[in-house]
Length: 465
Image (tube, rainbow, N blue to C red):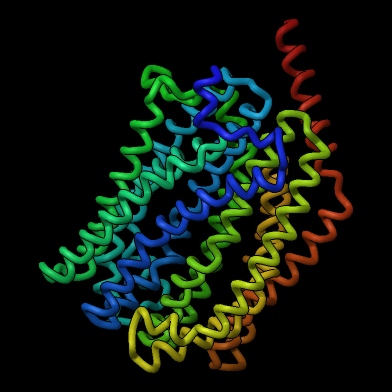
């Protein structure tokens, strides 16, 4: 057993600050490499094809998130469930949660591929995609969504490894596939002049490689979290637990994704320059916010493991440390991004109008990154404690309903795109106020304890029957 634990990181013992940082660093580097997939496509496309192709690729983020987000939420639920059982040293239940998660993700990936390929043209037209960009957007997305199974499975495998504290393996495999992605992008686009579809094909191939490498590692019997093909299937208890932890997050992500697609459709009305510039900003925001998102992911795993191990005071201390650290990082990143925004946007394309739109969005939003970080942190604490319904309600009400309502009203009275961008800091501020009240007033630790006690009583009654 000691040999098996070499590949895991128990967050329930030792210095909680250093453990969280050690765990978060590989997550950050893995996320960085994963974000590189689409960003490298954008840089190469923007410099070697044209700005219409750049607009087609960079405007992809919100649509991809919309179609992926529900399944990402479900896989997060599986990861939190696995973390809880790992922290409680309930390895039999941990194994059942892992195998159930893999099964659900496999069928989800197939469904997502079918939906993505078939609905892409309709959604892009609904988003008011510029006619000059539409053909290349459809071409890019159709090929991109052919790789959805690999993407969903990799995220699931990555979630399993992160749940048990092994955040280094996904980093290693992503490094290999990222290098492959760069090579394929250059070969397909620069050498063979394959167009935007070749960028999507390169990404799909690379994603399959990273997923296969993760699976090979999980099949290794020396790992405490190893996967056995014969055990692949759905355990009813684990599936219900996955839905409890992940369904609210999946619903939340989907509706937020829908709201962001609505925002993107308003940006698309301003033409291909706005699409390319704002799309470039979105890619950069994905990069610069990675350290923050990595720490929030570490917070969820830390909370889940420690509550599972009945380390309640340690959970509280870790939550406070994570929130403060993340907010400081976010604001430093935001200020730097504000200052160098034009130079960053120009990496994607040298067109003056493209740079103007991207810089305007960056300088309207980035200074408020600390608010976004705070909201994500409290949501992560709630999810780790099994209270995923809390962030779901807040996000639906503020990041979706309020954001969409604001834009619909404000665009009646103005055609200034800056007022579309302002929707983000406004809704971040309101959600942060609500989350602050929740964090200060609620007793999320004792509510977890009560939930576990009720579950044990039900199990005892079931066994007596």
